[in-house]
Image (cartoon, rainbow, N blue to C red):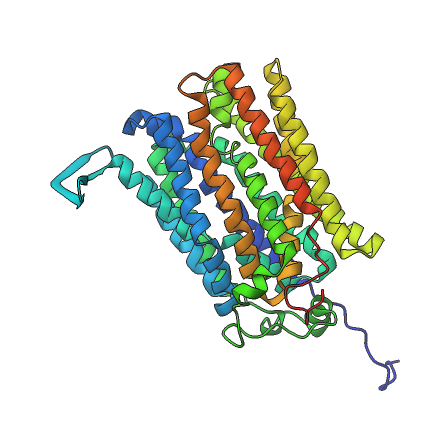
Length: 461
């Protein structure tokens, strides 16, 4: 017997949003493979191109400078044109400059000319160092906007109570990329040389972009495989997001500047990035200088990647915990902020203790624990960017991460000056105390982040 004609059928939501999350996680993993690979290849690059530690510090910072300068414009472009178009462009650009990193050779070209400024003149010289700075700067420009656009994707494809876990999955994948990078790049370098390793990573990015642009759509309303029940679940009481290019994608500086939550997220982001960028830049040197781990040993590769693996665990736990707190307490604000504050306080405490470590295994354990606890908060600050940003999620996330770039630029460049070519345990101790202080400042900023107050008062959830 059939059902009565007037009995409505309850439609089960499809799960297309988890396919979207799969693409986002793949992009995030590739992002950190490409970022961290230069850390693993540092010794090979220095040996062949004759760069010193100060020059490598500037090369690390060149990427971050390009990334920070274009992070907010990259997020805004996603708000304006849609994440599909912008993410495809981003991945193709960063893949091209990843591959070009492997083409830089040692050379010096002096034009014999100068740029004169009164009594001061700058010779027009191009060499391997300047070219590497330029390539890594453009790599940063190309990658800028990736995570702000992923934040917009989570805003458009996930309801409020699932965004923390979605961001947790994205950042778990990023940390897995960082954990795999030393081993993967070590293997590729052994087979193809450090140049070949960069070329392979560039090709992987192009393959991801080709699959993504074919399948992904910016909104559930534009995806035929997504049914009405899933669209209703994603939207809740909110109206569908406008099609890219329709309406106003720029919130205006006055609206941005009036948000205390955005200011607090910027302070938190700058603080944590100042501390965190020790990991993908100078961590191997610390392990070598203080604890005698050789760059070329398999143990060094494992220990360099192990904190990232711990971060993967922390990211997944932190994102899910924040969503559970939101549901359990009914507080969108403290469901985010309590996890964020606890993560930064815990990380700062562990990093401070690392400066006092007396053995290699104490230091490694503390660095891993700091990474794990820190990453409880990382997906939460990105989820809060989606919550506060609303339809301007890309712009808000870009502004937050641009501020993070300020801290990230300073940290790799300043550490060599503290060491002063004399990497004693005492100098490293000072570095760790300073890094810990930046985490504590970020924890204070979390108190002022209110995810329940969107940038536009007309939006909720």
